[in-house]
Amino acid sequence: MKPKTKLRVLVGAIIFLFLFVLVSSLWPKFFPSDEEKVIKCIGENSVLYVQFGSSYSKTQEDLFKGNLELLNIADCFYEPEKCVGVSGTPTWRIKGNLFTGIKSIEELKNLTGC
Image (tube, rainbow, N blue to C red; front, side, top):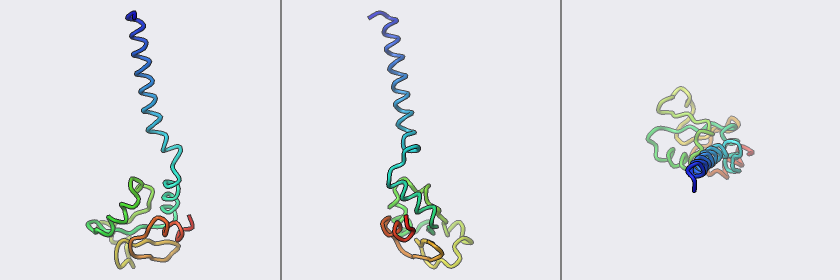
């Protein structure tokens, strides 16, 4: 192969690789999965009260995998003023009602109407 041809192939491969990585990283943002849509709906219709250091709170958070940023979370260790009336964690505030204990995504989906 001629040097110019080799250079063109190399540049083309680099551009292809760059575009592939770019599209792969942006795809979830523009096309969220059904699970992400449900979690976003839950986050928009509830508040999750947790406490730093609580294993139960950690277990609740772990159910949401990498989607915690979609939830409305108040940490009662760092923000006790937001947790007035909350007697334990994790607790969910949904439609003005408090639900204490670990809840599955399916339970939260039903409680929030998502």
